[in-house]
Amino acid sequence: MMRYILFFLLTASITSCSIPNQPGNAITVDSSDLNDSSGTGWLAYGLSLAAWDANCEDNSNLYEREVYARESTAKVWEELRANGDTVVDKELDELVLVEKSGYIREYVWNFLRKSDWKKPANLRINDFVVWKNKNIPNHSPTINPPVLY
Image 1 (cartoon, rainbow, N blue to C red):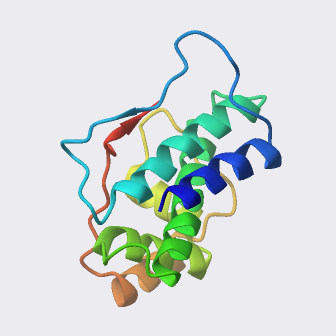
Image 2 (cartoon, rainbow, N blue to C red):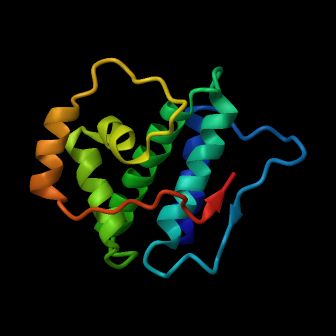
């Protein structure tokens, strides 16, 4: 499992650039909230937030940041599941389904929207709601993952 975390860190720094070496930059994991099935997935989420902050010219777009973090988390989780390196986690498995369906932007807007976010253009909300009701009808996302950056 550790090799995937290291691979993710390396990939994040190659595809964008490394996390700035500034005081105060840290990923904090609340281990009391992590379980064996989802811990690696949520760690990937925290690393994605750090990678976004390190590489984005506009760190004020928290919607795009959340889209990036959830999409990256889904991709890492999918690889871990494919390799048998983790057990079933309903929420993260459903996040993979969302990402593979192409509705990650709509997912973030629908489930995680903050009042100060500006609605992006071209969201397929109606299509997503139909898809969601058919494929993940009882989905309940983690609003505040146990990882802070």
